[in-house]
Length: 226
Ligand SMILES: *[C@@H]1O[C@H](CO)[C@@H](O)[C@H](O)[C@H]1NC(C)=O
Ligand SMILES: *[C@@H]1O[C@H](CO)[C@@H](O)[C@H](O)[C@H]1NC(C)=O
Image (cartoon, rainbow, N blue to C red; front, side):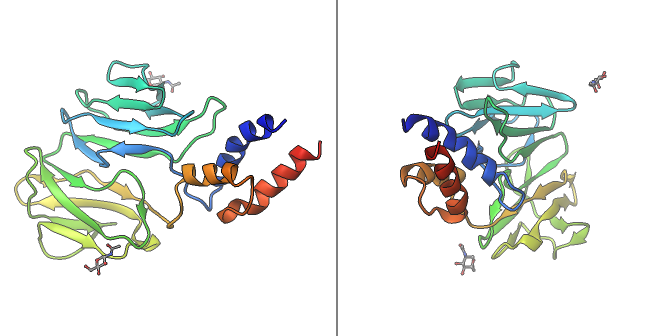
C-alpha cells in the first residue's frame, strides 16, 4: 500500500523545488568550469539517479549518448569532449520531463578563458576568479563585472562573502592575449541539495523538511485519505 505514494513523491518534491524562489540543482559538473578551451580535457556531467543529462546547442537538443562527443557512461553519468567548438547548455531531466537548473559551458577559441564555476555559487562563500592561457598558466589581467573594471591588473580577483548582488556577467582582459568570453555567475541561497531534501522527504515519512513541510504533509494526506 505504501509503495505508490513513495514512488510518486520524488516527482512532487522536484516540482516544488523547481519553483522560481528555489534554485534546484541536481546536475554535477567536473571540473566545475564555465569556460574551457577548444580541445581541452572532457568534462563529466552527472545527475541524481533517475535523471538523464541533456544538452542544447543552437536549436538542437540531445540526450546524453546521442552524439559522438557526448558519451553516456552509465544511466546518469555523461562525458562531453571538446574536440569541436561550441557552447552548450546542460541540465538533468526525468523521463516525465522535470528539469533541473541548467548550466552553460562555453568553448572558447580566444586567447584566454575566465576561470569561473559552471554551477551556482553558494551565498556567503568566497570566490576567486582567474584568467588562464591555453597552456594552463594564469596571467595578470583586468577583471570586469557588468562592464565595470573591478580593480588594478592582478593575477586573480576574489569576491569575499558572495551575495545575490554579485550575480552577473564577468570576464577578464589581458594585455597580450585579449579578452575572455563573458560568463554569467549565478548565486544561490545556502540550502540542502535537492537530493538530500528529497531523501529526507521520503525517509522522514513526510515530516518537517525545510520548506517542503506543508506540501509533503498535504500530499501525504491526500494520498492516504483515498
Ligand atoms: C536549426 O538550425 C539550422 C541551422 O542553423 C536551420 O537550418 C534550421 O532551420 C533550424 N531549425 C529550427 C527548427 O529552427
Ligand atoms: C572568506 O574569506 C575571509 C577572509 O579571507 C575568511 O575570513 C572567511 O572565513 C572566508 N569564508 C569562507 C566561507 O571560506
